[in-house]
Each structure stands twice: as structure tokens, then as C-alpha cells.
Image (cartoon, rainbow, N blue to C red; front, side, top):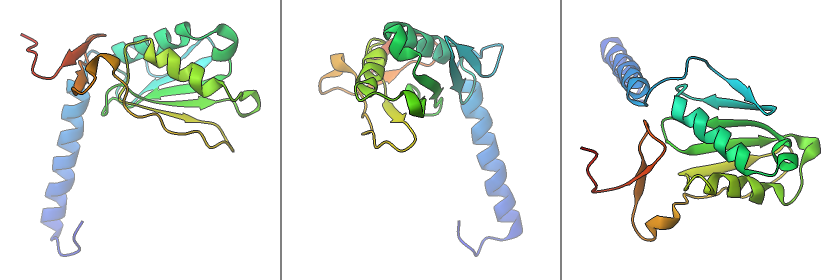
Length: 156
């Protein structure tokens, strides 16, 4: 922020950002009645505790072979980016094929807006947006449901 803001202007900026954060939280979709949970040994988190995001993360784990899914430490979904996931792998349980298995688990959901797979001491390439049916089109994930809505389609 510019250094030449008056205290009143700075206070207005802070209030506007806080208001935008409240709106983002409220518009993210129905909330789960809980915060972080552990599912099959994996800690699941959502920025705004959105119920459908927990459901999608569980489905991604279920789509992975059990012995591979047990190697995951946590999955976090960034509700602001919608369908953007950060997956942490238990360092001592890392396998070279595991990032591909994780990616396939999320692909089985129909796609994602981004996938970051992290493991201490490992360099794992970031996975860009993946929506196979989109081809050249841009798609959005509707936050309240587990389906993909192409741009231009009406939700009404």
C-alpha cells in the first residue's frame, strides 16, 4: 500500500478488505458443521469449511489405491480459488509415482483449478488447471454442488 495514505484512508482500506473477506466466506457455499477433519488418516482442511469441498477431498482419497492414500499427510482446499488443492505427503513415505496417483485421484472428480503436491525436500512440479471436457473453454466449479458449470450456461 502507498505510504501516503492517511490513517483514516488506511482504516477504510482495512475495513473494505475485512468486508470482502466476509462476503467471500458467506458466498463460498454451505458450511460443514466442523473445521478440519481426519479422513482415512489424512487431515482435510478448507479455507472456509465448505461442505462440498470436504466431500470432494474424500472422494479423491477414495479414488486412490489405499496403500498410496495412506502416504498423504493432509489436503487443503483453497475456497477462494475453488477446486484448488494443496496436498502434503508424509516425507518418509514418498514414492516417485505418488504425485501421479494424487493427480489421478483429483482428475477422477472431473478436474481441478490447481494442484500443488508438496513433500519436504522434494521438488514436485505444480499441476495446472485440469478440466478435460473443457478443451479450449474455460470452466468454473459451482461452489454449492459437485458439478462443473461451463461459462455462459445459466444456473437458473
